[in-house]
Length: 590
Image 1 (cartoon, rainbow, N blue to C red):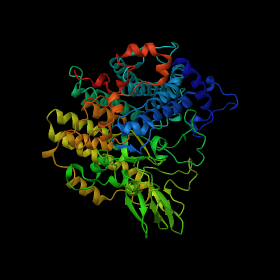
Image 2: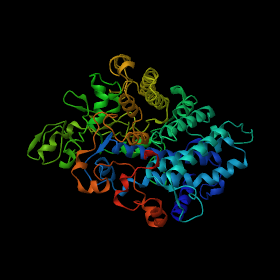
Image 3: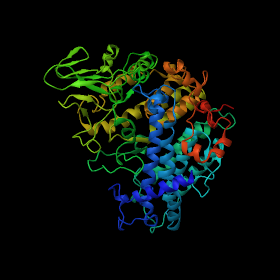
Image 4: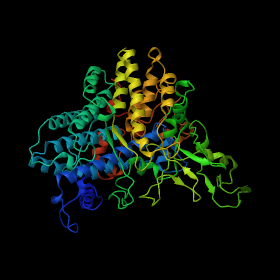
């Protein structure tokens, strides 16, 4: 593992000096002869942030297939297989690569340089990101190299989840201590290199306490370790308003066409766009659409539905129609569907598979008539000015008809809600509900919903009223939903809290963590079931035996090929096909 990372780490270091025009990446050396020694604390931090963000964003998007927020056209690709609970090795790699190779390879040099100039706030940021990265690794893979990782040992041992968890909590406490220190004036100001919070130390402290609350709450299955009052205490120091959240801004920059060293993706665009919004293969599920359009069977639509579900234009005159969700309890994906729609942009009718397709109309290019109705499904694709050299981020057919509106999180300039006030509210609601304080739980639950709506509207208001998807939510719809659609303090349930948290944390790894904590219960996530295709696919049941669930991701090929003995010693089933079904440490009830 270490030799592999050393080779790619050198490439990453070389890339630090050429891939982005942000001020914190500027250097004053010959760009033709870069070296590791010239990288300043401010340039290293910005790139560590970028690569960690890509790791967690990829994990969150892929977790969306596991939790059935998202699905994929029928194929043998890793996204499609994960959506059918028949995972393949390709699912495992990217979060590992971007954390260890892109971010982790720079930890040591940043720490040494920040220590030398007493740049305490850079050390705090480093400790926080290190903790976030290793926590992501243990959430994703379970046992991991930790105590011997990122060092000179070629075959580092694997540590168990408990050790990693405790180490990450210790790192967060150390980060908090560093952020509470006063840097000397001679040290580089955090604002010069911080692409997340623009050097706002108070926001970093809020983020650290929020992470601590999240991680302490994830111990809910550990009866001897789970301390609800400690979770609540951390929440008191976490973001208490949307303005205190850590929200990452992204850009659709026409000049952003170089890409990073690992994937050649644009550097400034949102991670969800890079992972899913670029293509036409990713769709939303019926379950996700249902919780947005008919939450708790009230018949009152969530105002966020228009923004989180994709739209397209149909008919003459053109009319925006919202996508249907793919029913994962149906056989559609086992019958080669859904098939991405085509469009006759010409002024004349065309012939296709024995039928006449009128001008300026949609059709499915397939001889299978069962697939002709797939035009009701719209992908979450966005276009972009940079990556696609388009005039906007709305994906259109050549006659200007909107083929896909994009969604709130899938556009190239979509924000990343790295750690937000709404999540803190839902954690508080869950803890108070389980303590028997239903009134307090309800108040936190309402604050979480309102907070997420407000957070979304902050970004949506920057678009003006471009279309139904890219426009602010109307206050009348918000008021109607909050009054009639979310229930009252008298009928608050854990299911309402966790389902609303799922919506607010769309594209987040934490949604998979929460589903695992509650054992994928349909009592906690009403209407949720494992994909039908899993129940009739023997290969899937080899990886996730019947009666078990999708609990982790199999270790990456780099560890299997180059560190197999350490991997084998880490878990009795580490190299077996069914490792996907074994809970990680915090997911084992005690």
